[in-house]
Amino acid sequence: MIKSEIQQNKSSYRSIIKSTAIFGSVQVIQALISIIRVKFVAILLGPVGVGISSLLQSTTNLINQITSLGINYSGVRNISQAYNDGEIEKISKTIIIVRRCIIATGLLGSMVCLILSPLLSRWTFGNDNYTWSFVWLSIILFLNTVSSGINAILQGARKLQDLAKASVIGSILGLFSAIPLFYFFGENGIVPSLIITAFSTFCFSYYFVRNVQTIDLNVSIDETIDQAKSMIRIGVALVFTGLISNLVSYLMNLYISRDGGPAMVGLYQAGWGLTTQYVGLIFAAMGTDYFPRLSAINTDNLKVKEVVNQQAEIALLIMTPILLVLITSTPLVINILLSSKFILIIPFIQFVVLGMLLKATSWSLAFIILAKGDTKTFFYTELTANALLLVFNIAGYHYLGLKGIGLAFIVVYFLYTLIVYLVVHRKYDFTFSSEFLRCFIILELMCICSFTFVFILNYSILCYVLNIILIICGCVYSYLELDKRIGITDLMLTKLRAKRND
Image (cartoon, rainbow, N blue to C red; front, top):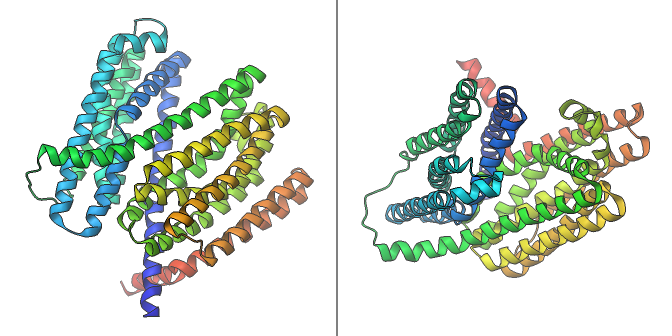
């Protein structure tokens, strides 16, 4: 019995690592594709082209975020639950309803963009010159909404490799089709390139979703509407949460701009981008597998506790070596990716890095509320978190500048983690395991020590020596803990023996 439990735990941990590796690679590839695309736009079209492309994409992304009604997220939860029950009729019915919903929301977004195209051109560019651009971009809104819905089906059905292939191949094809359009047509090639990218992503998503096994069923309109209501209720809560988060970001940029000017906003955004760019890849990669797994077992609080603790442990063990390297090499990273003009953001980055383990912990906990479908609780906890973030960020910047925003990040995520923990403990009887708490304390102390060395020794030779020792210790500790959970050494030895036998 004990051996069986150990094997089940190892299997669960391995599933987390495998999905993180797959989607970590996908996130890295897509980030590189995005960098290459921006580089070609910058070279072939110049700053004006970069600006036009960014404004068109940000506008359509905002419309898509609102009109999709969050079906691409709530659909994952419903499909995961259906797969957990294992009834092919229920699975097929849920997928049919999700498909109908994404087509309806895709048409809604497309119509909104089409009808508002003159206004969108005036609001975005201050003239009517881009009206026809927004008319054509209405096609993108439909394709992107349907593609994200199809990806939700793949995600909920745990067809993770197919989802990864669809994302990467579609992005690469979109990149290679965009470059000649920029070269031959200049700024006039921006909209066609965006349409081709959206169409290629849709085609590959559609191709892979055919691997999801379903049966033909007649689902009535009334039944579709009934199930769609629950999905929309959850989805809309997520949409509003996202909009509140964007509003807080906008207000913070506005406050910093009025106090310190556009240059200070640039420093703030650059520092935030560096700290979240790399760690954000881990969150995105883990969330792809974590949310459907948690949704599938959301009615069993004991299983929820087990999955959340496992996910949180893996997140900390993977993140900490990256965070230690980032603290140690912050000046080098800034000089390579930005320039020496951005050295002022070093303290800000270091404080944010210290708070990242708290963010990883709260991130793992917040998914419980989402998987349970408790939209009111999720909305209010996220609203509280964003309100705290805005208040503490403004206070921190007022008294300590950018360094104060970094310090506020630690305070806010400490409070948010505490709030979310109290909520999930009282409502769903969740508790942290002793294994997670031990990992958290040890890894957080490593980050604090690294920060202290930098703060006191100010990147002297001794500082680098001590921090390199810490990085080695962090990597060794993470490896040993991961080995204990998934048996890395045993897997490597098994593969070596298999190669020798061949």
